[in-house]
Structures are given as C-alpha cells and as structure tokens.
Image (cartoon, rainbow, N blue to C red; front, side, top):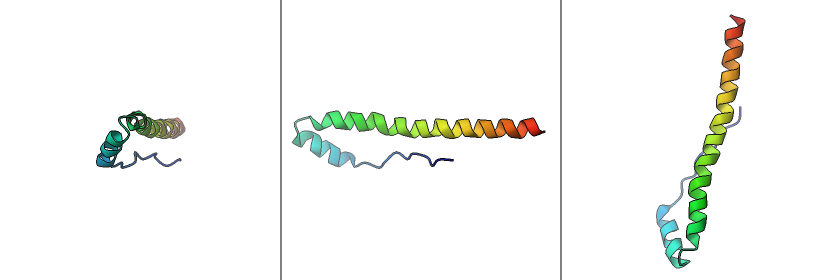
Length: 63
C-alpha cells in the first residue's frame, strides 16, 4: 500500500506577508496550494480505499 499523502503544514503568517510584499501576486500561488494539497491527500485516500475494498471482497468470497 502507498503511504498517505499528508497535507503540509504551511505558515499562514509567512503567506500573508509574501502576499502583501508581492502586491497580491503571491495570492495566485497561495490559492493553488490551498486547492492542490487537499486534492493530493484525497487522491491517496481513494487509492487506499479501493485496495481496502478489494481486500475485503476477497476475504468475504473465501468464507
């Protein structure tokens, strides 16, 4: 089984400071990371759930 993709711990304060320093341009990256991190996490859960369901079906079919 693959490992879970963990959502990284990001410094919100650092992101706010970078947002204001770059006049809002950093916001594009910030929104990207806010949507990409959870998506990768949920995709890894989908893979593990499919493997778990397959394993449970095999166990139940042997009974």
